[in-house]
Amino acid sequence: MTKVDAKDLDFDNLDFSYRDLPYSYEAEYHDGKWGKGKLTTDSSMNISEAAVALHYGEEVFEGLKAYRRKDGGVNLFRPDRNAKRMKNSAERLLMPGYPEADFIEAVKEVVRANQDFIPPYESGGSLYIRPFMIGTSPIVGVHAGQDFTFRVYATPVGAYYPGGLTPTAFVTSEFDRAAHGGTGQAKVGGNYAASMLPGEEAHRAGYSDVVYLDPREHHYIEELGSANFFGITKDGQFKTPKSPSILPSITKYSLLELADEMGMNPVETPIAIDELDQFAEAGAMGTAAVISPVGSITHKGNKHVFYSETEVGPKTQALYDRLIAIQYGDEKGPAGWAVDVPLD
Image 1 (cartoon, rainbow, N blue to C red):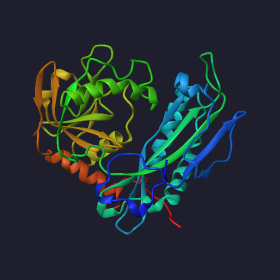
Image 2 (cartoon, rainbow, N blue to C red; image 1 turned 135 degrees about the horizontal axis):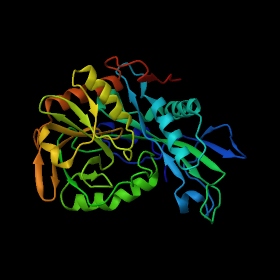
Image 3 (tube, rainbow, N blue to C red; image 1 turned 60 degrees about the vertical axis):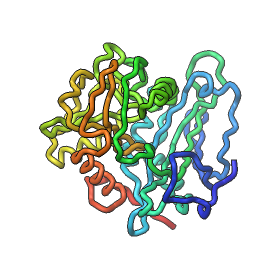
C-alpha cells in the first residue's frame, strides 16, 4: 500500500477509513519479556501461517484519538484508561499485558511521528490511534502462544457515523454480541467478527445498526452495534446498561462523570427493552462514535421514537458539547483527562 502524503488529504471531508501513514510502533515479546519497542516505517507484518492469532483469535486491540487544539497543540483523551483496558483484555486471553506507561509513551511517539496528519482544529477531525497485540507463536493445538507482537498505527478520520449528530434508527437483533461469562468485557476481534452479520442485515433493512440484548433472556439492552447505549429519562436522569458482558467504554465512564457534573443523577442499571417509554432521549457512545443520537429503536416490529428522528435532544447535545470541548482543549475537564503530547 502506498504511503499517504498529508498534502493530498482533504481534512474537512475525511471519512472513517485506514490510511497508510509514515510511522507505526512495534514491540515484541519473547522468552517471557517485552523487548524495547521502536518506531517503524513498515506497515506490513510478517508472521507464520500457523500464528495463534490467525487460528484461535489470540488478539486484542484498543482505539483512542489525538485532537488538535486551537493553539496548535495536541491532546490525548484518557490514554491511561485504554492502557489499563488493553492489559485486562490481554490477560483474559492469556496474553502478557503491555506495560501501561510504555503503552502511553508508544501512543505519544506515533502521534509525534505522524503529527502532520492530525486534522486541524477547525476541521472537527481527529487522529484515530489503534494499538493492538497478536499472538505470533506457530500453534496447531488449542493453547496460548508464547510470542507476541504489540503495534500501534494511526489514521486521520472524520465522523464514524457520517450524519454526525443526526439521529439514526436501530433495530434489535436475535444474535448475541457475546456470551454471558464470555469475552464481552474484553476488546477482542472475535466479538466484532460476530457482529458483522447482524450489522449487515440491519443495514440492508435500512437501519444504522443493531441493538444487542442480553444473551441469557434477550430482555435487557446490552450494546448498540459497536458502541454503548445510554438513555435520558423524562425527568432528566442519565441511565446506561449494567451487565457483565458489556465492554467497559471509556466514553461511557466519562459521560457518567459529566452527567453527574451536570446534575443528571447518572446510574448504571439493567434496562429492559420493554422499558423504553421512560426515555426522552437516547444515544450511542464510544471512542469512534463519540455520541450518536438514537432516533428510534424497533423491537419485534414495534418502533419506539425518542426525542426526534431528525433532531438531537438538548441533554444529548449538552453532553456532546461538554465532552468534545474537553477533548479539543476548549474547556477544562477532570484532572488527567486531557493529556498533552509535546511536539518537536
